[in-house]
Image (cartoon, rainbow, N blue to C red; front, side, top):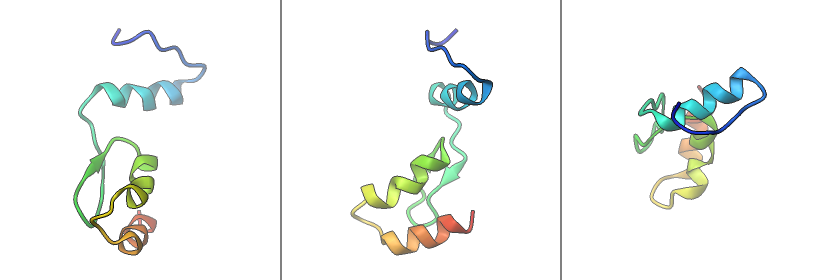
Length: 63
């Protein structure tokens, strides 16, 4: 047991478990930064001032 979090369904548990591992399957096609959740990749353009938001959004939509 890594932490004391409890979840009502297995999907939420699976997503949360990734925060305790180094698994990062979603990479930004523009800057290469990797994320464990697709949702984090989707908000990345809004958080990054060094990359083109439009270019990132266009590439993410292809996933």
